[in-house]
Amino acid sequence: MTQNNDLEKPLPTLAATRTESAPLPSSLSIWTGYLLGRAARLCRSYFDSLVEPLGIHGRHFGVLAVLGEGKSLAQVEMSERLGVDRNTMVLLLDDLEAGALVTRRRDPRDRRAHLVSLTDAGRAVLTESTALAQRTNDEVFAPLSPEERAQLHALLSRLL
Image (cartoon, rainbow, N blue to C red):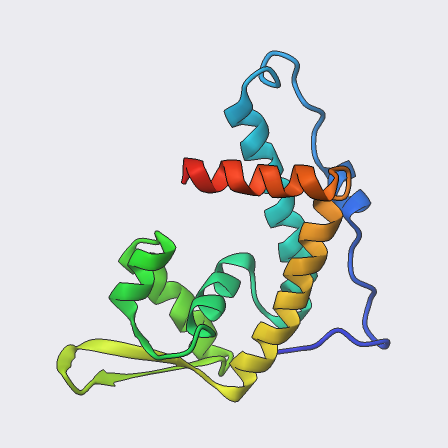
C-alpha cells in the first residue's frame, strides 16, 4: 500500500469532485431520495479519491473500520454488519489480504468459517483513512452549521 507524501501528487479537492458531477436535473431534484443519493455519491467519490493513494476504496474502509472495533470477525458476520453480500465480501477481503492489511484464518470452532483480523499495516491504513473520512465529512457538510449536521445525522440514523 502506498502513502501520500510530498513527493506524490497532492490529494484531490472537494471542489474538483463537485465539478466532475453533472448539474442537478430540476425534474429529479424535487425528490429527497434523489438528493440523498447524489449526496452519497459525492461523499463516496471524494472519499475514494482521497484514500486511493492508500491502496483502498471506501468499501475497503468499511471492512477495516469494523475490524478496527477490536476483535477478529467471521466473514459472514462482517457481511451482515456491513450489509454486503457474501460474494462481494470475499472480493473485498481478497483485496485487503493481497495488500497485507488483513489476515484470514480458519475458525477453530467452525472449520467452515474464516476469522478476519487487521494486520499492523491494516491498522496504520485505518488510522490514515479515518482521518480522511473526517476530512470528507468536514468538507462535504461544511455548508451546514454544527446543529444542522447533528440534525441531519440524527434524521438519517432514524431512517436506517
